[in-house]
Structures are given as structure tokens and as C-alpha cells.
Length: 139
Length: 150
Image 1: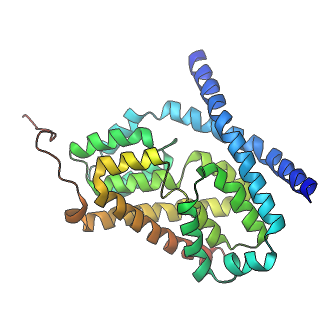
Image 2 (image 1 turned 90 degrees about the vertical axis):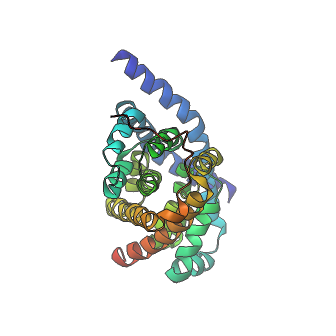
Image 3 (image 1 turned 60 degrees about the horizontal axis):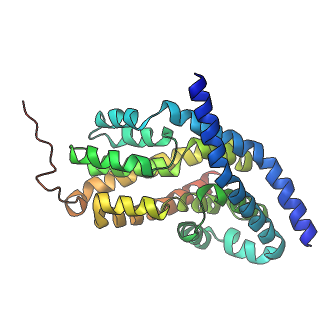
């Protein structure tokens, strides 16, 4: 039991060392966006028309080169700015479609490029459809 | 302006910090009890069950990378690629780590919807893989195939 507790504590601390600074930076980026991004632009791009904002958020999520936990403060700031709930769903879900380079290379190597590309395309398409469903249901 | 940004950043960061710490610790505890071997054993029983694999992916903690070698071994051993795709999709879309932050930032309703929709997305990806199976399954060299001696 003691060993297990020690493992959890040490491993958690190790992870915190990388996650917490990244989370702080992401919070800073989010708040800066909140201050400098004009409301009209944020609303026009991310909140006015889900038909435009959901696919855009999914694509932004996919190409955003930040860890998944760091997406949350940015998504929260965009939500405060008026981004729709479907857009937030697309951003958070899109962010994990492509993972870290090591994970993607492993997946690519193990299951082949056809499976990798197919999963990428299918996931993107279904995340966009799912985001529209969330947008309608949580409106 | 800069002071305001820093103040709000700190305020927000300190608000989310305890949740972040709790999320990390809970994810580690879950990881301790849900090992790769356990997931492997459960997936073996889900050879053709996309729904089961999607459900398993939803509750599997931690990053995906440690599970990939195991998934490859299971796939060579006969696990359908559609099941692998469903598991990868749901495992990446949802995780215990995310639950804490999501509930706090966007509410419980959003999190429940995200889990439910992610589950459906994973099943959809799995079913699509099954339909496209012929075209996307990599050829496994005969030397790697598991021979069943009975």
C-alpha cells in the first residue's frame, strides 16, 4: 500500500512539473486573447454561425500544437468571449484527433498509413457532426 | 492592461489549480489499477465488439502511446482493426483527467453530452472501419501471424 501511495505521489509530482507550467502559459494566452481579441470578431468567427465556426474550431484544434490539458483555458476564454458550445466541443475534441508526434508515428507504423489517414478523416468528420448535435441539443 | 491580464491569469490559474492537481492524482490512481494487461485481456474478449471497445476506451486513463504496442500485438493475434480504431478514438476523446476540468469550466451537462457524443463518434469510426476493412487493413506478414495449435 505504501509503495502504491509513493508511486502515485512521485508520478503525479513528475507530471505536475510539466503540466502546471504549460497550463499557466495556456491560461495566460487565453486571458490575453480575452483582452485583445475584439468581441465582434470573436463572436463573428466563433459564435455567430456554427456552420462556419464548428469546422473551423475542429481544424484549429487539430493543428494547435499544444498539449490537450492546455486547450482548456483557451477554450474557456473563447467561451467567455461568446463562442458557442458546439464550437467548444469541436475545439476540445479536435485537439486530440492528432496527438503528440511520437503517438502518431507509432500509430502510423503499427497500423499503416491507410488506417491512420482514414481514422484522421473519419474522426474529423464525426467530430464536426457531433459538434452540430451538441450545438442543437445544448442550445 | 498588462497588470489586469496578469491578475486575471493568476486568479483563473489559482481557481483551476486544485482541480488540475486532483485530476492528475485521480488519473494516476486509476492508471495504477487499470493496467495495460487488464485492458489487453478485456479487449481480447471484445474481438468483434466495437461498442465494448468504445466503452473500454472511455474509461481507460492516461495517454494512448503505452497501449499502442499492445493493440498491435492483439491485432496480429486477430483483433479487428475496427475494434482498435474504436478503442483509440474513444480513449483519446475522453479521459478521467478531462472530467474535472470540463465539469468545472463548462458544467456537468456539457461533460455528459461530450462523453455520450464521443461514445457515438467512436462507434461510428469503428463501423466505418468495418465497412472499409478490405481497403485499410495492413497486410500482416505470415511470419507474424499467430498459429493456433490445437
